[in-house]
Amino acid sequence: MSLLEAVVATVILALVGVACLEGTQRALVLQARAEQRTLALQQAESELAAVTLRADEVESSSPSGRARLPQRVARAPYQPAWAESTPLPVERVTVRVETDGGRVMQLTRLVPRARSLPPASAPAPSSVQP
Image (cartoon, rainbow, N blue to C red; front, side, top):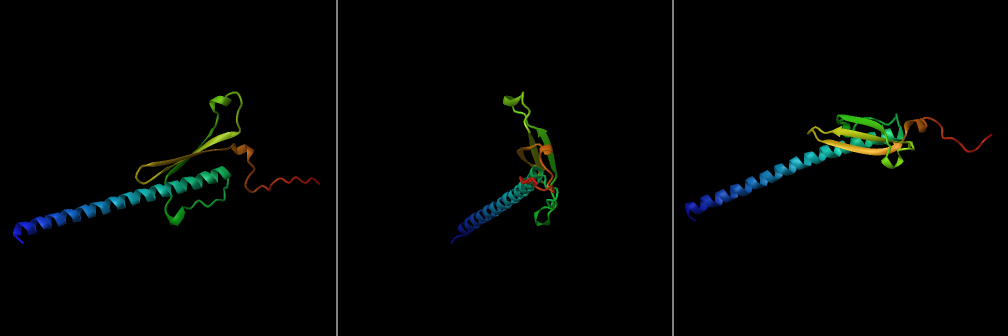
């Protein structure tokens, strides 16, 4: 084996090693992004469920004891173009959660208007009359 062959083999080995390290680093970046997206989605779904069910007693702590991400909840009446003359007892609830990387997860759901829902602590109406 000549010196030239040894140098070429060392260069090839170094290139393969660098490629493996770059691949590992990219995989870690993708894993961190996926974790942030999952956390944002979980928080948005939790907040949307709490708003939809009007469950004031729903625990607002985040999973795994992590800090909650910044979020914004917006309620707006839902009035599609085909029902302009008739007000619908429905409103659009939108939850926006921002991740640490500046990305935004937004979920929207149509729910009955708040005034038509009984409070969570109110007993269910019974059909039996005394």
